[in-house]
Length: 283
Image 1 (tube, rainbow, N blue to C red):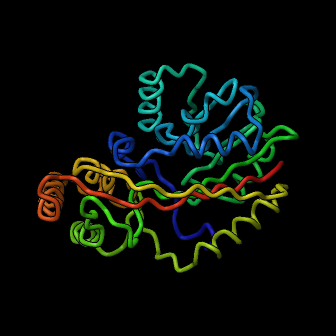
Image 2: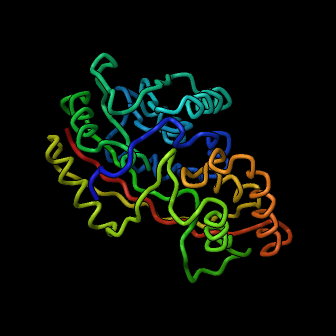
């Protein structure tokens, strides 16, 4: 469960940025409002979104702060974040191309730091300590647990077919091999449960000086997606990032689209999204 056996490299999400916004189901306004109420956000202070990707959470929360900073190691993700900010007319943001492990006090201090679907890629103990050092005395670290590329198995009545996720996984393995790819390396299978991972990370946060954790839960929602969205969701993942397929990418995409067409000839799908959990740690 520890941060061993794999080393980060810049190709981790190479080519994924162009697919990320379409391929990931957006965080909801309900999530932002619940977080704002819990932290009594009033438009003051600074936000630091660590591992921000294309700014999905940064831009959703920016209006609750005087200024927001998105930090990410992937320059293509930040270029997409800038495009999304411009399209949304959000101007109180800036973007820093940096690994979280290189965070230094020269960026200033923040009222809130957020981690969303990113902490597991980092040297968690080191990053937790660094984040504690850049938060104000009354600041908070927000760890958002969510799955946005795909839904969950459920008994809910759906208006359209579910995406054939198991078949998609088999197709990816057919092209890329049985081990999950991650940049230039591979990842071992994770056998720890969500509860065990949560306990491990809680120990890290406490060791870094964080206290008084609070958990908020936001229900998942039913979404309708289209074939292009499902294709984008696959390419948005590190384990099936476009660069991994090399000159076979178009062949893979053609087979993926045919698989989707067989399941839903009109190209529409439904998914029940997983609930989101927000852990808030006080500095």
